[in-house]
Length: 243
Image (cartoon, rainbow, N blue to C red; front, side, top):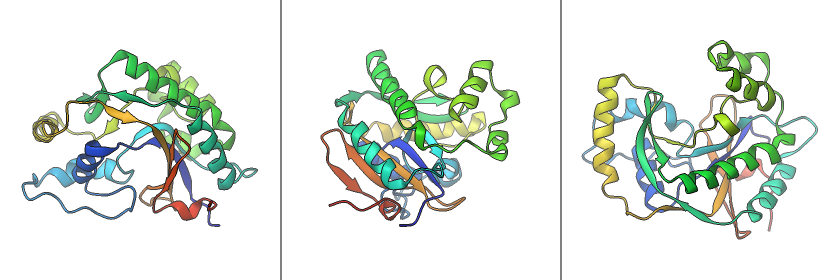
């Protein structure tokens, strides 16, 4: 069984949010295939979405990590199944917002946000035995000198500066943009978001994405339903098959 360069525990949007978000980014995270733009696409959209396109439509729960030498992808798969079946479904209302210079769907309800924060915290802590410590180059890319003391503490302990108290749930829709481009992208997304249903997005699964090799696009390996069901994506070959 091949091993991916990195694994990540993400929340994969579902239903109309998945369809709209994948079309917006221009790539399907389940198959890895590009998606043709709609006929009325803004010509700037591909540049707006270049950064998040590589990672696929998602919200980070446990950020990308390399596997420790003393564990396996098969063991990670079993742990993901166990973690998922311990969760209860809930729903989250989403709204497109500006966040640190990029656009993302964020949760607008405090109770739903608390539920999501708990889910992310469990994913970070319960699966940490599978995470190899970041090497010096990986740490340097996080620019620790620019982090707050709390973020630096999280980076040192968990390998990522934005977890637990410093975690902010978001489904990334653009890269960092200058103010004029940000405003234009916001207007375009507002028009598209008007087509979404008024109901909240259901959360009833967590997903394992993989980066097959350094610099490659992330794809779904497997979705893990809270009811015990699973559904494979293009990256399932990096996990032990189950029947």
